[in-house]
Image (cartoon, rainbow, N blue to C red; front, side):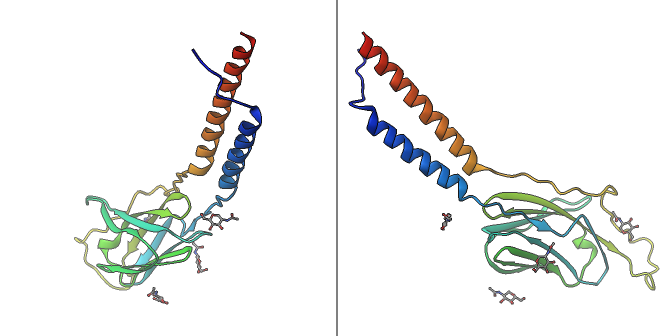
Length: 193
Ligand SMILES: *[C@@H]1O[C@H](CO)[C@@H](O)[C@H](O)[C@H]1NC(C)=O
Ligand SMILES: *[C@@H]1O[C@H](CO)[C@@H](O)[C@H](O)[C@H]1NC(C)=O
Ligand SMILES: *[C@@H]1O[C@H](CO)[C@@H](O)[C@H](O)[C@H]1NC(C)=O
Ligand SMILES: *[C@@H]1O[C@H](CO)[C@@H](O)[C@H](O)[C@H]1NC(C)=O
């Protein structure tokens, strides 16, 4: 036998109002990162510096960079780096506020490939930047040392956005509305019987 759990509908409505307020505040406070990164393909002469940057409007939580090169296993160059300066095997990463910068001071063939940036601020984003290294034109007649050039078609930035705040908010509202509907329905039938 079901008993009506509501003494009055007023406290329920108040609770519902508070829940809605919390959900909408949470949703409105999620500002977007809007990442802007070095575009597409970078071409750099061997031995010269290469700089790639990604800027967002909030501070970075962490930055991960992976390098995919032809005929080589994917390498994770930097993994979940927070704010600060990091250096590994010729790559230097500086994460400062909403700016992340990858510097290669002396580019070599080993540095060519597609750099996949995983940017984590308030949301998560993925960006590709291709680094192509060219021979200095006035020297170097070595022909057996082949240059790897990545895929000729321009690499489009890929964008995967997490929208946890908004989605969770919508799910909570739907659940709360459903539960309240069921309670009101049960109470209504209970009173009539
Ligand atoms: C948004 O949330 C952050 C914590 O996630 C808080 O520090 C900030 O004050 C909030 N901003 C507004 C406008 O509520
Ligand atoms: C990121 O911001 C820095 C400093 O404001 C600027 O020098 C750089 O060009 C920006 N990068 C991009 C890809 O817009
Ligand atoms: C990181 O390096 C830059 C210059 O290379 C410097 O201005 C900055 O203070 C350094 N940050 C930290 C946290 O060491
Ligand atoms: C890479 O550089 C070489 C010159 O060394 C050029 O022929 C090739 O088209 C470049 N590849 C891309 C994808 O830009």
